[in-house]
Image (cartoon, rainbow, N blue to C red):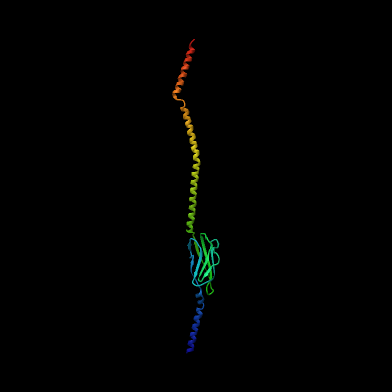
Length: 206
């Protein structure tokens, strides 16, 4: 009776071990606990990338890539137990980026993933574009006002000179008109009339 019981118990234990064998390596795999930048984060600037895993990792590879394919990682990543740090080439211009990482867990299983994020440069991309357009229009308006002021300043001396010449001509004309008073003209005409009368009277005498 004992032998069949022991045999059945041994078969049960063996079956449990066989079922649990595929699960044991999976339980040994590590995982990413946190990241800086976080997924879909919006940052004013990017100085470095930090990844923290549940366990110590080895052979890390970290790539910081822009939408145009430009890479911004600077040097090799540094490993400190479960933390991986990657320096980047500064300054990182505003745009959308992706951190692609790959590590090897303690059991030798490779892990990899991607973290998308955005560098705004202090403001959102749409706001930055609108501010740049507003700045251009504002800078153009004073330029137009300055050109108008310059044209007015250039034209004002000419207008002033023309007005001065017109005033001088008017004064000369008025002075010419005022040069001979009316009473003098009356005296001249009176003398001329007397002379003409005397001439006619002398002609009538024999």
